[in-house]
Image 1 (cartoon, rainbow, N blue to C red):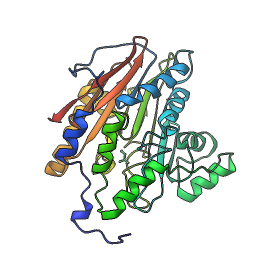
Image 2 (image 1 turned 30 degrees about the vertical axis):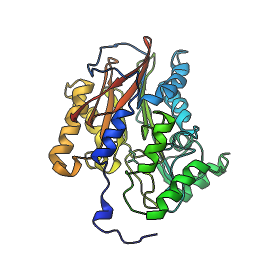
Image 3 (image 1 turned 90 degrees about the horizontal axis):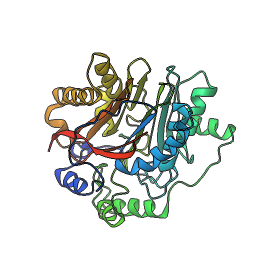
Length: 342
Ligand code: GLY
């Protein structure tokens, strides 16, 4: 594998063609308009990307019984983590450029307790491991081999996470081995064959329980064919996820490097603290990124979703095609977020 990356190799973006293709794959149930209704009330759970309606349904089982939001998000995120068809989270996730599936996840509750694991291999449900870091250690983050040791010492079993399908995609990529981790043309073809199931990356899930307490969780296998050791925004508290029980919660999906630069999810929560609605807060965070990065993010995708203490929610993206799923007492629904670029 390459040790030195050329400038062109460092490009981490979604090209227009990819974006157009993704847009075509948007869930047919998604609403055409991006107007966010005011479903005030609790409980409520929101996740990045339409296919995560299934994850919300699992979280809802906890919420409708009066369970805690932190237990709901931990349960919900395990759905895509255990789904071999989902090639961007957990089991079945596309490997790094050396052929290893490495996972990142984090969780945060209403008290500011949080746990995170990064660059973890062989553990099917990194969100459970992140929860254990939160509950059983004095720390917030465990990484790589140390996180794996901690998992094994606490009853987790090593599992093969590289599915034959994901390995096939990696071997196809190896033929050219072009370091351009967000561009996976062959995979797109497969996505079309499979329908819209894989039209998403990270799952970020935020919820408010019947008690009014907020929590969130985030899990990903990161960019396909990434450099070994690369970690994005998803396991970084404040970037991929942030919860402030006085104000609201936010989470992100898309190119993690860009989210980290603006401490994205924390920024969204602070914008809500200043009086912005969840959608306005997500939009202003995206605008801040554009102000900082200009043309460098013109062809990238970055998306946020947020919820406030009133149970209002919203999302916003850099590019069109971002969907998010909401489950409340009104049932399950998918929304298409507004975006800066069309
Ligand atoms: N947002 C997921 C990642 O960049 O790894």
